[in-house]
Every structure is written in C-alpha cells, then in structure tokens.
Length: 252
Ligand code: NAD
Image 1 (cartoon, rainbow, N blue to C red):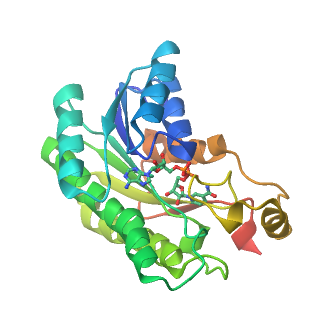
Image 2 (cartoon, rainbow, N blue to C red):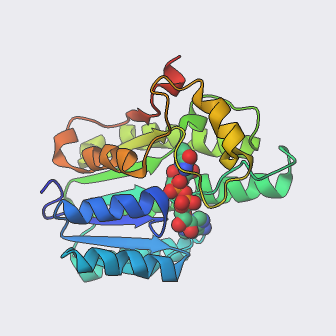
C-alpha cells in the first residue's frame, strides 16, 4: 500500500500513462485519485473501473491551458478529499503530427498545453500543498524529447518538454524547505499518444527501436511504476531529479 493516506490529482488521466497511473495509485491504496482531463466520457470510465476494483476515485473536467480550471480542480480536490498530497502533471500533446516543424500555431499549442499547462498545475498545486503545511510530491511528465533533440517532430515539443525538465528543477530548489518534492519523468518509445502522427507509424517505430538497447517499446505500467516511486515516501530524499524510462535509448 505505497499510496496509503495520499490524495492524488492526475492531469490527462483519461488515457495512456495518466490512466495507468490512476489505476496503479488506486491499487496501491490511495485515499483518493482524482482523474482530470478534457475527455469526460473516457475519464468517467477510468473512475468506474477503479471503483469496481475497490478503489476510491472521482473525475473532474480540466483544460490544463485554463488557469481558472486548474485552480478550481485543486480547490475541489482539497475541499472534497481534505488534502492534495500528490500532483501528476501528465496531460500533453504530441509534436509528431505537424508537417511544418516551425508552424507558429502548433508552437503555441504545444507550449500552451505541455509547458504552460504544467506551470499552472504547479502554481496552484504547490500553493495548496504549502497552505496545508504537509509534505507533497509533484511529478511532471517530460520526455526523452526534453533531454535530446529529434529531427522529425515539431520543435515546440522539444521546447515544451525541455521547459518541463527545468521548471521542475527550479521549483525543487524553491520548495525543498516547504517539504515539497518535485521531479520529472522522461519516457522514451511508448504506445503512441492520441495525438501522435508520424512517430506512430510502424516503420518509423521499428527504425527508432534499433537505437533502444532493451530492443522494445515501453509499456504504460512501466512509466506508472516510476511515477509511483516518486509519489510514494520511498523517494523521500529525491527532488529535482529526472527519471528516464526509455529502455536505454538516450544512454547510447
Ligand atoms: P495520451 O494521448 O494517451 O494521453 C494524454 C492525455 O492528455 C489525454 O487523455 C488527453 O485528453 C489529455 N490532454 C490533452 N490536452 C489536454 C488539455 N488541454 N487539458 C487536459 N487534458 C489534456 O498520451 P500519453 O502517451 O499517455 O502521454 C502522457 C504524457 O507522457 C504526455 O505529457 C506525453 O507528452 C508524455 N510522453 C509520451 C510518450 C509516448 O510515446 N506516448 C513519450 C514520452 C512522453
């Protein structure tokens, strides 16, 4: 029961790694898991599944680009559940569907969702944790794309994930003495995102795999377990760290 007594809010938890993390947190005995996303039907389904398995969860509509939405989601979590102990900034969109890798509208979308969305989450989540005066853990989903560049995705994806990597470290430096730990997770080749374009193409994935020492793509639970470690008290001396979950892709 690695999440005992902890209330967690996860953005983008209607799908993919966010949904896997919500299910895992519930299995690990979280006091409550709040699934937050734009996709209401899918999010409600994740909540129903968790409840059916005996866990405690609720759904809240959240557009991470809307600061008022973020404040409302954090306030409601604290009001309903009594605290916010773990915040997972997971919502994101891919840069691999863009044909023009310097398209300005795509840049604004990518930065708005992947970077500013995380900034808003941290701003309101950390404020609630500070106010409560208890320990907290914030986990931000970056990517290998926040560490190295890629030639076939919009530059805004790399820029936004690089921003997540460094706002994580800055916030870790600022909030260590508040008892709040802030870390980033960097998945590599995973099941494609809903918004993936050319990187979802089997031929492109096969080519990428040649550079992955473990020789296979990752599974959503393999990232969820990394997030669980950072959320749990097992990582009590870990802050400002980047946990790479990429089968060795960026090690070579
Ligand atoms: P996914 O597309 O399955 O899930 C992303 C979720 O974010 C969706 O449920 C979507 O509705 C939600 N979302 C998008 N925009 C939103 C908004 N404005 N407000 C609220 N929710 C919004 O993708 P995934 O693979 O589970 O990705 C999760 C995170 O991991 C993302 O930040 C992604 O960039 C990162 N990541 C993914 C991969 C990969 O290969 N899948 C690799 C590295 C990093």
